[in-house]
Image (cartoon, rainbow, N blue to C red):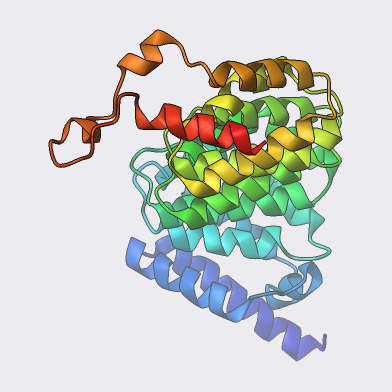
Length: 304
């Protein structure tokens, strides 16, 4: 870079940083929006050139403001999108290291667990975590060591949008692959999702287990009961994934337990026959002597 261009770039960055330091929330939000618009898909060296080799000074300000404001959500989406520019930059390992050193991963995990956080903000936080996981095994381990598996699994179970759930599922799969130290934890986390109340989360958990099971090799016996219970669901997409997973598990050590469970489903327990969905108490609904989920479970068992 020529001397005059270098001086111009330095002056531009100095003015930007001063504007940030003195600016209100509105001013900072505008700076972030402009930064994201102008720097999409830039490499680490390109960002350094844009900031006259002082990009770290801007990233430091971003991470500091994020830690101060993420609980109240001030321009949170804009902050996360700007940070993702640095984290996703190829040849930008320096930025990744700087973000992690100040506790960035923990902050991202806390955001996806906040009840008051918007779905869009959680989604952007998950995208940042995916950037970290993409950086290699030691970064995946860092997320897992920060109780990331539990945080992401809980976010998947409670998420209100399918896009957020999909991001959670993809991150869990990333954490299971090429991460020998924590692959079993991810596997157990997915099993723990099977009984959750969200049909979409149940579907994604069963679907993901079909990918992770060959990675961990040995099947955990705790998978049997919640998996068989999925056969009671009235959601066809969950039924399909449960059936396919059961078929694949027939090659593992839990096959006998699954077969015994499937046989028992043909003769449901007395208490299962007593319980009935409220819809069956409607006088306009044809009389059915057993609860509908039991019939569904039996029918699916016969399809095996």
